[in-house]
Image (cartoon, rainbow, N blue to C red; front, side, top):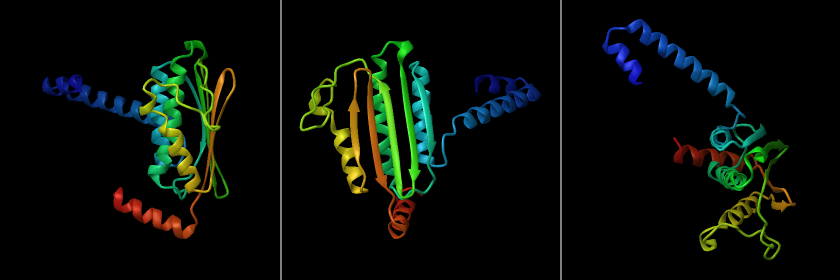
Length: 196
């Protein structure tokens, strides 16, 4: 912006216009590259994840086939996506740079929405308590709620939330059933009031 402003102030209007056109073209190309799916919320979250992964030198592979209106509240979709993706990024940062990778697959099959995230890990998973993975983060009293929240959301939508792991990878699988037409209409109305 300083260059553009400087060009305008020194009456180099044509150069300023050319710069603006080049920046606009570059922005359009970048925006097109970062389009993952029709669902605006998922697309924004995946864009942010891709940008963070690029900065942290983490290979990020994604395949997302998600319509805009899926019958799941946007806030719930955010929770289902953000927590496991943030955890995958944090776990990947502990892996040697050449081995860092996250894969994220999101799709719909009939009324069901599925999410599968897989990332390399470089730490031992604490023995599951009551069959559930525990956080490995410091200050455990302040962490580990994401799994419970995701399980609650999955259960609310008649789905599942399952975490599994092996020596190299952590896997997070979630499913949620789309709301029926009447419930879908109510969700759309509620979100129109909350998110104009």
